[in-house]
Length: 135
Image (cartoon, rainbow, N blue to C red):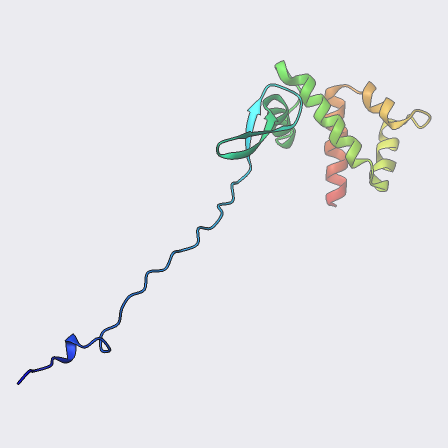
């Protein structure tokens, strides 16, 4: 007589079916590369696309964020950053009115007034307007 083991039967054990996993598309993060050029552009390589960013402009932005006065080699870039931020700030009407009261030059255009101001005066006016906006 033949003895049948339940473990050897085909129905009692489960077969593992191997399935292929779908490979997900990896999203590359856009990183910045710092260069000495003034243009903002994109660089592509084996790892994906990266933003090319100017070092001088980056440092001058950080100096303005820390409320530093324009001095040294980057003074021109810092003054340009203060001018840029001041022009953006003056799109708000109360800031524009305060600016005109502070400079007392109502007949000239705002761009001319900003261009004629020194770096120290630009910083003072910019910080004054920022302080008044918070209040």
